[in-house]
Amino acid sequence: MKNLFKKILLGDIKVEEYSTVTTEGEIKERVFLKVLNFTFDISKIHWLLCLDPIVFGIWLKKDENIITINEKTSCSMYFSDSNNADFKSDRRNVVAIIALDYFDKIEETEGTLYLLKLRESKIYHVNFFKTFLLFYKYYKKPKFSFEKYKSLIAAYSYPRRVRVVSFKQDDYFNIFPMDLLGEIPQSGKYVFGLRHTNVALAKIIETKKIVVSEVPYIYKDTIYELGKHHSGAPPSPDSLPFKIKQTENFGFLIPEWADSYKEIQILKTKNLGSHMMLWGEIINEKTLKQPSDNLYHIHFLLYYHQKLKKQDYRVV
Image (cartoon, rainbow, N blue to C red):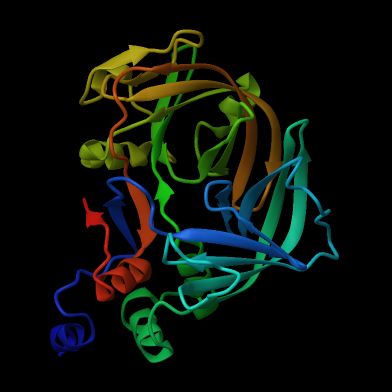
């Protein structure tokens, strides 16, 4: 009966919490921030940094920071499924809306990183009946509410790129994948959201050093195997199933198949909830080979929505 139900509801699509895809070029989706009467395209300048509560980092340069966002400011994020959408005149492509509250900010000479916390979300990927049935059949579990389900769908209605993070201190070494991170354009800054349960977090904060690598999607299985190192015992370099190389300044270890890496000095930390935000400055970067297509996470409901529109990314 369950298989028949799935066949009627979804066809042959495999149900997962998140779909792992490669974009093979330009990302289709766009994200807009609406603050009072101003609207900004923040597609490439926003990052998901915490999951409980859900907190986004949004970077506004000095020339874009024409208003001050604070506790009294009304903010919303709109997620569009179209790269060609004219948000101001046509909102038919909006698949999710998030209402945001001010959480904090980090001010720099070049601009401000606003930290905004999700207050409520609305999603429009498929009709409400199908959305609720999917939740009830595949996602419902203790302490996981329908509201939480909606908020994660909304947050992952824009592809979140997966990168590999490395750390080393004396004989201690760790390497793991992350999608709660991003480079601040034209600023030399980088932001990370690491879970408090990450075994390397305290050491990273102590030494104020971290390395992030851009990696090809074709190593997906190896990248996910590294995910065990978030909260478990870190590996010895000799036990890794691939060759490694050292970075120039820190001497941290990265996969030999990485396309590039950045060595980052941590400047500030901020507790967001389930995750600790790290704010850093790039002190060295190195391109090792021609950039490849990357691995991204999107929520299954976005992938299903794309599939219905025959505009889906390639699942890897």
